[in-house]
Length: 260
Ligand code: NAD
Image (cartoon, rainbow, N blue to C red):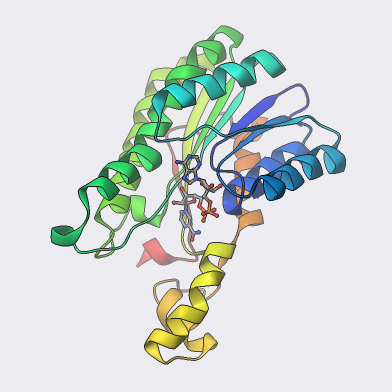
């Protein structure tokens, strides 16, 4: 159980992050959700967590590309709840282009949001975790932390970076009862993925089944999407006593993608 614990989950107004925040709340944790979106939708997600699980949920609008806002988010969480015991660095964006046409500002933005934000958030939470002698840091990496795909240079570089940062932090914190791991999903069924289907059907002249099996799940041997709840279940396990000797690991949940 995560009762008496506080979890900050970045990029949790939708998709994987929201599922993780909800799963932590179901375990009794107070949570801070973060990310962008329509104010009404965010408030609905926040209040639903409080109503369904009887915990407190705060929202931070911190922009993960801005180090000062990341520090403020952690300080505010600490002030509101008394500690930050679990940090999930999950915010992430994608951009697809050949390197020679890849806009420099997109590269900088992806490296800032998908990689550097985890460094700044860790920097802010580690002193408190050390003082309390307990902590869990979970980074949402990707199959792209282990293998590459063309035209995703910034994303693949940032995710490989997250895998390295995870290992380094795990070693630094190994004797402090603070574990640091990353989760590497393959294709996860999220609203974002679902929304890409009609466009891909039109552009490539394919049926929905063809888009799913021959394009999206081409490299995923199970031919099934990972679900956000499956990723969240792994995050909950990583916070349990059973996972206290797991640190520095890069845990794949990719339907066999990276076994090939
Ligand atoms: P999503 O778009 O549903 O969620 C991304 C979240 O990050 C949203 O809450 C968004 O508002 C937030 N965000 C974006 N920019 C931000 C910023 N500057 N500051 C703060 N928040 C910001 O996508 P998702 O699929 O749930 O992705 C979550 C994580 O999982 C990402 O790191 C992504 O790379 C990773 N991932 C996703 C898949 C997949 O197939 N969906 C696979 C592997 C890894």
